Image (cartoon, rainbow, N blue to C red; front, side):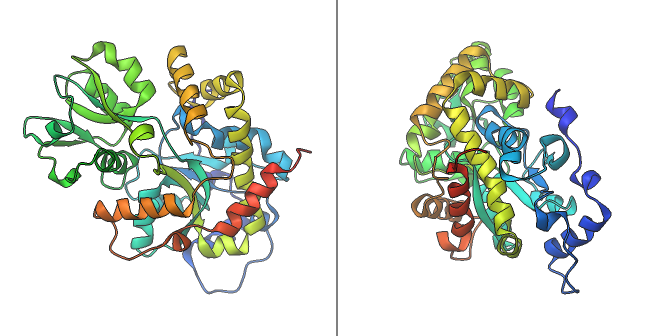
Length: 356
């Protein structure tokens, strides 16, 4: 089944009783508490994803479909996951779909907090990722990005691709940021940026390693100018977040759900055949076989899927500082403000318990 066929609005699988409880949780209404329902008993989690999954983020999907029963959860990708196409207004849209869990870029989560949302990260999605800054047409240095003739494909300011580019600029010692790039071309999807790069419409852009491999043959003088995994080791690309009050009231449920992702990370990282099968099932356009092998090798070498859940204080503070430098944050934050460590620690404990 293609992922397009899997796209099903969360609202269509929520019962009338559950809908009332979720509205209370997500809007912060002060009406009388709703009676116990599926949300409290672990029978439903609404999960919103900000973009179609790439190969590096398949543990979320694989975990839901293969390990939910290990933690007494009755959830599936088909019934409980909704995929969007953009970080733009993602949190508001996800709430409208009654999503409890939001998997999106860390910068988007921090931006939502800046706008008054009391979101907290409680589970990883993908920490390190296989993004590369790809050059073409003779553009092969960071300095050339700041020339007026260089067409640079970037994400919207709240997107993962934008914060990745700023991380790469910082990682190679560049003091200028994205707003100083004179010829930006805003293209939110990495797939669309790859298409435009391959067609000759971009001289530099941030795309995935596998996308680079597949498109490079069509490009004039392709080059990897910088890579996320080599130049920004503290980076955390995306995470799973939820309303802080909901997490406090539903810690066991949230930890059990997160444990499905963590257990999938361990299983997929340890078995290429399993990883390949998961990517082919859940990614609409999987990498070619060589690209799949290359990505798996990167996952072995770099902290894409940390066994302890990652999200260390140092890495989260790095993301806070990076998002601040990108102009999305004005409010001072610390890692403790952003991460629900109690839920994550409990999820790690559950994931490490023997199955069954």
